[in-house]
Image (cartoon, rainbow, N blue to C red; front, side):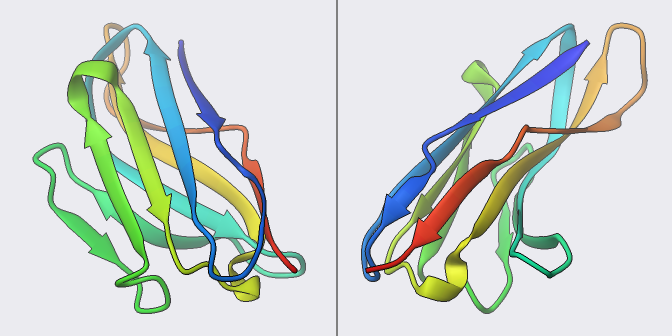
Length: 120
């Protein structure tokens, strides 16, 4: 009923920038929290940035000051601007959203994941 489609990953050199997007579609009534997770090889999936429906944001220390999460409620889209990228940022990045639909109470939905590789 709800699909999250990500775009914007790729290969970038250390110190470079990338912008990820994640658009939600389907029978959406309201989207509550939106978030970005990432999973590096051999590691658990990590929550590192969240944004509420009102625009309040939160970050883990490792990305604070370098990454910016934002959302466009009219487009049901969440963005992640990543600057000053480091090799340790290499991971598969997933968007996540808590979505209420016409037929279901709020539930978590996931994007398909997009690879971000930071390497020279």
